[in-house]
Image 1 (cartoon, helix red, strand yellow):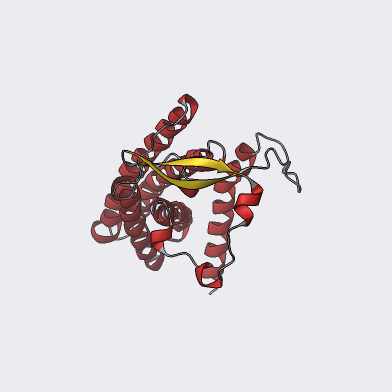
Image 2: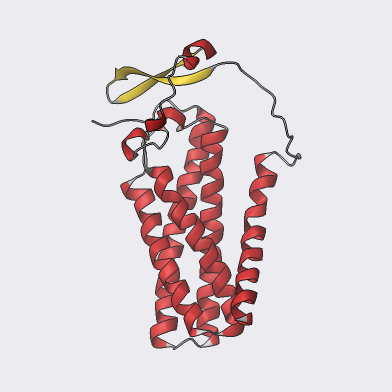
Length: 228
């Protein structure tokens, strides 16, 4: 029991340390202000104008936005209400691969069979969801600015690195569990690969967040192609 508590605490600590760059980079090294400055009084909405297969968006005024009627039955959005399912899938590999890397790092010290199997399952699900989010549910974009395209290239690059490293980490982990029977060196090799995969997925997540929250790609379907 004590061992499980120690492992959980160490894994949580490593996860916090791994995520800490997001807070720094998201604010440009400045402390987060409690009250955000309002840069514009306008919001965006989707307009049903179609140019080929791309939904065009148009700014609207707060008054127009206020016309949206509150509907308790629509508070919980269905899958069909989202412009794309990519955000609904992509958080699984981010969470699973980073936690798996932290747990495997700790298991280098403890060499616990139970942890080894838990990490194996997490990597398997993380790899499948990473592949799915990059290949089966990756949104196509249209009308991006030159800078947004550069950010997207970095996002896609680190997403590819994530898939390759997660696949390699899964192979190393299976060999460690099934062939080498949890020898310390085999756990260490898998840990190094998984830490690399954790870094890659964290960078992919950072550039993805930059696309959404800074470049404005994705909210309400903005700059996303909708194929019918």
